[in-house]
Image 1 (tube, rainbow, N blue to C red):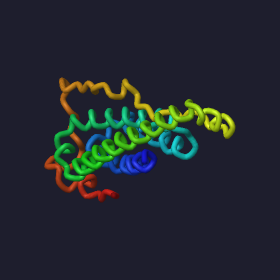
Image 2 (cartoon, rainbow, N blue to C red; image 1 turned 45 degrees about the horizontal axis):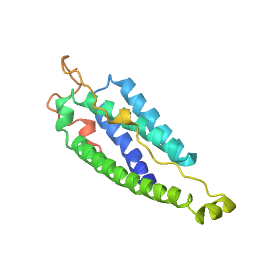
Image 3 (tube, one colour; image 1 turned 60 degrees about the horizontal axis):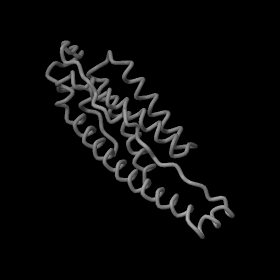
Image 4 (cartoon, rainbow, N blue to C red; image 1 turned 90 degrees about the vertical axis):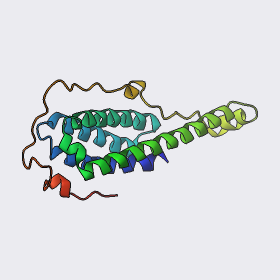
Length: 174
């Protein structure tokens, strides 16, 4: 379900951050934002309900969008095989999260409608069944990220050819 896909995405984030960090050392604020958002998602998965998980998921989605916007300034990073693989994997997970969210919300809608009609409303009242919350995404999170390409990208330290970087040689978990 949603939890499984959120965990998969959360476990992918450190590899993604380390890969980008190899090319964009000075983007510390972005890395901290992603790390904080990931931590919040993990906490929400431990003890939060769907609403808490949705809020944390929205924060991580926004932080990852910002990370990818930063990555746009580094052509060598865009060309790195492991970055492309992580980006593809993240995209696949995002699709699975969307499908799981649709399935969950469909079931919540069905359940919430069911406990409001006779005779289920009486049974629901006797046993304390209450309406469940939907897993909602932040509408603002769907907005496009604006990226400023007017400034020159910083030249990453190290090999200008893009080969031999520690980020290129790191293994991804999967």
